[in-house]
Image (tube, rainbow, N blue to C red; front, side):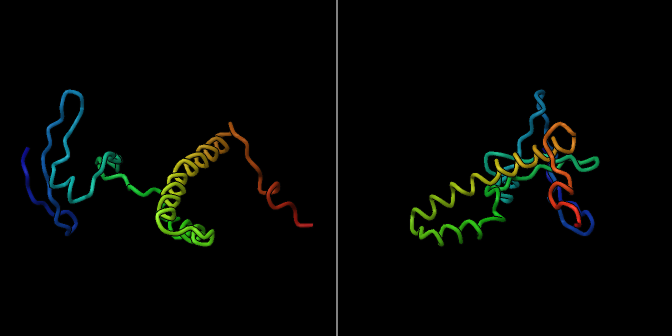
Amino acid sequence: MSTALAKKGGTRMNKKILSISSKRQITIPQKFYQALGFGSEAECVMRGDEIVIRPVKTAPGGEFAEQILAELIAEGVSGDELLSRFKERQAQIRPAVEAMLSEAEAAADGTGEFASYKDVFGTED
């Protein structure tokens, strides 16, 4: 493995050549792993002729955090129970979103249930 600094589009990048094992495995260099905050999972994205490997966000549904907290506070939850119940609700978001996406894909493919615009909004009478 060799290390080099490179510039791409005016942005300074760290670059390292990695070995690929016979099982197609690579090791993320420790300094990259720590600097980017990798945990136990990585996301692999093919972008054109590149592969981007980045940490999986550890707080799926983070965009709903304020709403979840507001609801729990309105319910009178506080202290350690607030943290516990917040984590439970936040963990439910990703599976719910994935289920909605699966239903939407099935509807788009014509294999699942769907409602038309007219079914949802009716007609202008």
